[in-house]
Amino acid sequence: MSNTALWDKLGKTDPKHTKKFKRSGGFEGTAIKPMFSYRRMTEEFGPCGQGWGVGKPDFTVVPGPEGEMLVYCTASIWYGADHNIVYGVGGDKVAGKNKNGLQLDDEAFKKAFTDGVTNALKMIGVGADVHMGLFDDNKYVNTIAKEFEAEKAGEKKPEPKQ
Image (cartoon, rainbow, N blue to C red; front, side, top):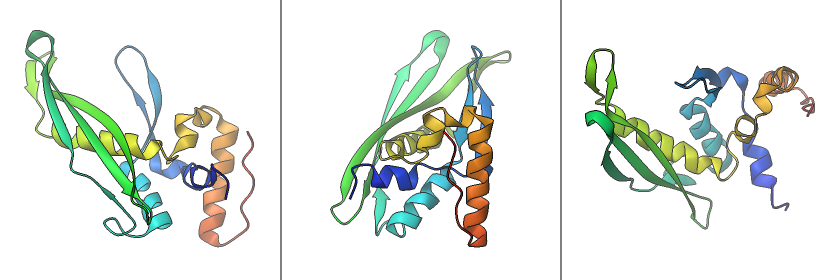
């Protein structure tokens, strides 16, 4: 088996399960919907808790500037019969400033956890094509979309153009 066999299986992302985003400062990118990543793991290893799973998260709350509060989450995932473990870190703002002043986010810990888990999944290749910048190329996105459509229809998959 190739050292990249798992990466190659999990590394292709169905464009229907992505969304474009913009962050302050002008950064733009493509995000993978977390449920798609979990589905890919389930397809490869079986149900969560049996063939793969998530370890207990570790949260750290850090004060930021001007009363902001940040939360970071170190999360682990395990997978396979040998329970291989991989870690990821995610974060979010518990309290952040906007035009109305300081605003609390009661979903911040959940967001940080999801971010940490999906960052761990990247380490074994889940959504690698997005994280490697291939979704910046419309030809690649169109080809991979056709591949996922063909897979659903039970047809032969076209090879992605890189």
